[in-house]
Length: 311
Image (cartoon, rainbow, N blue to C red; front, side):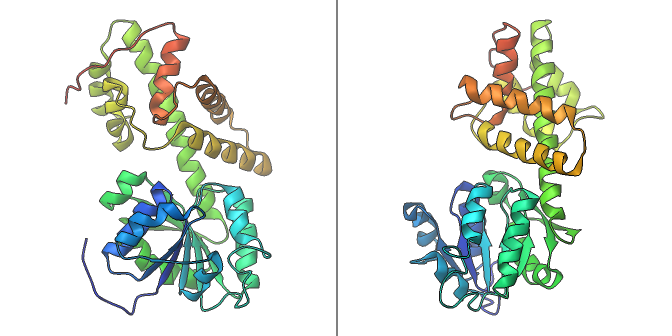
């Protein structure tokens, strides 16, 4: 990543230091962007402090940066930031010197609308900028953003987003970026569920999963995703990238949005039920959501063993 000392870049107050937030803010710090950080659990800020971030004493101190950038876990956490009595803009300075509030969380369009209204009431532009990728993808600079909302706000934050990820896709106005992110996650989850099912079918029928994945990855349906998940399917390497519980949360957001828009989504609905069963089973505790393969094997009364990846 190019290293620069350009101090004319907007300053950033980063809110939310989970695994994704820490990886994203670290990319900005590595590019010499001025970053101040706040997290509900202050102990999680140590890594960012060591990389040069300034720790904010209070959430409302974030409004003294040009850009407030949030990365939180769900709608509830975003609504806490948008709360006019105790959230970002509840201090005496209101919107302070902040020009844009950009949120990269995976949240519902309805939650993003509330956050945008709160920002506007404080005289601040709002940008939805959900990110596609896991912490490892972010660390490599390979994540991509979908953005929507205030056009001038997007113009300001897009150069910063390109320091974090490799591309930015402008989706239009309002919360269309949130819909795009939920759509991607729905496709990831339904694909992983199908991949788990066919892998167990192959294994039980006597076809090695390594041979199956080698064939799939070389076929018309092979993709970056199937190649990336080959280690999970073949070697049962289930180190967490994204949790089953988090993915289930996203599927419920997709289905809630589908109800609002009156769009039947039977495949997504069935996949959400599979994720619910996976979470309730405990099979995915501490593991990646690709642990769906363990549930598929249990349903088939079949035992899987790790295999060597062919290529």
